[in-house]
Every structure is written in structure tokens, then in C-alpha cells.
Amino acid sequence: MLTAIDPDAPGYRPEAYGASFEQAEAWRHATNENLRRAKPRPWGITAALCIIAVLLLSYPQISSYFVGALTPNSNWAYEDTNIYALQDDLGLTGNGVLVCIVDTGIEMKHPDLADANLVRYRDFVGGDDQTIQDRGEDRHGTMMAGILVADGTYRGAAPNVGLVIAAALNSDGSTQSESMVADAIEWCWDDMNVDIISLSLGGDPDPENPLGSMTANAVENALDHGVFVVAAAGNSGGAGTDVTDVSVPANVGGVIAVGAVNRDGTLWERTATGSETEGADGTVRTEPDQKPEVSAPGVGIISTSDPNMAIPYSASSGTSDATVFVTGALALILERHGDAIPAMNSSRDWITLVKQALADSCQPNPLQGEEHHPRWGYGTLDALAWERAVADSIAQNSDT
Image (spheres, rainbow, N blue to C red):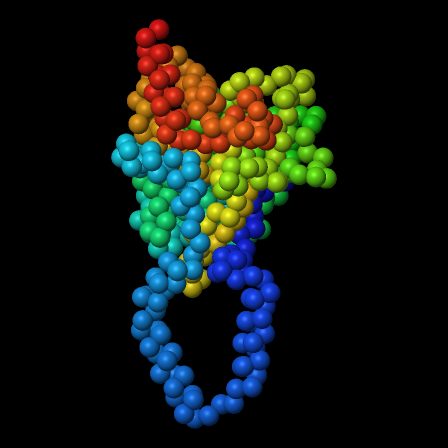
């Protein structure tokens, strides 16, 4: 079974509002006690109705105030990875690049997503392609889309990409039919001709045949046709796990597998550990395809959620979120350098060039050492350095 890597998007903890759990509980009990003691009086009902009417009339202003005042800030994730620097310094927005997100769907009614360039939506779960929706109870797909293309309270990593949405995970962020996800991946590259497929989903690798799944085969087909695939490394790390590699399909060689780090650059405790070998025959992985390849912010990330909520934003932590930051940075790089693809000998050569530039440009944490680390990868994402490394590699390739 394949699942969304981070299906839990619980909203805000009390700390997000500057309160401890104990304070939040005290407020809740005090409110309940006041309501219990309150006795209805005619004048009180009239006053309450007047207040409600005023609140309804002024809701847009009040809502925008509370969104700004109470929504925790996730701009740090874009700033620390130099995604905003790449946008601002070079004027890149992802324009002309097609990105397919395979997830639970999307809520286009969210104010931050209303102007997104949705090129195509397809529902692999229920077959209802006409009703654009997020089938996930936690709006996992909407959150991932927001990290990429939000333009409102938040500015996404590549807000002007052409967005293709494949809803292939159901209400709990999982699928019982692996063929559904595989079909969605095939549709993304074969029918929609996208440049990048972003997969914040995965399953535990089969130690006997980790690359033999339908999803992995679909990913291989995409890579063979020059389509980049960015996938979550998985949340299987930490004590007590018996998982010995990153998730499927992040374990496929040409895929960019993404781990998660905290705001201070330290590892998120549950980010998956990559194996030194690939496949049942134990082939040793070599640069730039060691797993995971890169880490990115993935803890306490705030993004777009259910538009029907008073404050339509939620928080989540995991490699799902981290994956989309890498997808967004890659979209900006392809906007700037995509014209260089025809000069390469093959599609796989182009993917290898970009992945090698990623390995060369990652910022290693002092705790990981100088070599590839089985959880940090080659280091944390630096979008600006990645773009420069790609530019240098293209120049060197054209001179040979």
C-alpha cells in the first residue's frame, strides 16, 4: 500500500498562538464554565444578535487580521533554502514549467490558490474529473500544492508553474491499489508531458525486489523520457524501525529522494535512512544517486488547507513538505536552463547533470561529515547554489 508520507495535518498547536498546552486547557475550561453560568436575558439576546451582525459584516477585515496575527510564519523555509533569493535575484517564478503533483487533489477555492495556473486535474480515485476537489480529510494535496504555488498570505516556491494535479490517494491519504498511483504517474509524463513529477507519497521498500513495484516501473519510464521525479524519502527513521531504505519510489536511482530537517538544520527525527546498496543484487549506489540526495525544511511547515476553515492554513511535519521545496527549486532552475536540454546526449544525461549539480551545491551540516550521509544526503537544499552549479555544468558540457 502506498500512502501520503505525512497524512496528518493537525492544524496549530497552542504554542503557535504563544500559549502552553496548560494555558490552552485553562482557557477552554474557563470558557465552558462561563457558558454554563450564563443565563439568557432578552436584552442579552438582542445585544448578541447585534454583535453577530457586525462580525458578519466585518468578517473579511477580521479574517485577514487574524490570519496575519495568528498564522505562524513559514517564510523561513523559503529564505533558508535561498528559494526566495533565486526568485528575487533572477526574476524566476516557474513560468513555462509543467509540474504534476500526485496526491489527494487540491482545493482551488482557497484564496491563496485561486490564481494558480491549473492546467489539468484528473481524479484517479473516483473518476470525477469535472469536480476539482481534495479527497483527503487532512487536505494533504492542498498543503503540498500551497508550498509550490500559493500566492497570497504565502508566496510559494514557484507560483507561476503550470500545475497538473492527479488525485490518486483517497480520504485517508492512502491507496489500496498501487496501479492507481502508477497510472497517475504514467498520465503525468505520457499524456501531460510534464517536466517534473512531485511525489509526497511512498511505501516501504521490499527488500527482495525494491524496484519491482508498478510505481517504481512507472517512475523509471518517466525518467527515461527526461522527466524529473522528486519523491519523499519517507518518515520511517528513528528508533524501533526495521525499514532499511528510503521509500518506494524514492529508492529508484534517478529519482531525487528528499529528507527533512528542522529550522536549525538538524535532522528531523523521523526522516528515513537510505541504504548504501540498491536492489536485490546489492548494487552499490554511487554519486549522485546515493539516497537520500538532499534534505530540505520539513518541520512545522504552514501551508494552505481547507478553505472552509476560519483560518484556512495548517501545519505539518515530514518529508512530504520537504519534497515540494526541492520540486519548487527545480522548477525555477528548469525555467532558466530548460533550453539546454536538447544539447545533451540523452534525457538521462540531463537528469544526471542536474543531480550532480545538486550534490555539489548542497550545504553539508557540520554533524554529517564531508561525505554523503544516509539521512542528510549530500546536505541541505541551497537553490541559489544549485542554479549556479547547473549553469556551470551546462557551460562545461557545451565546451566539450
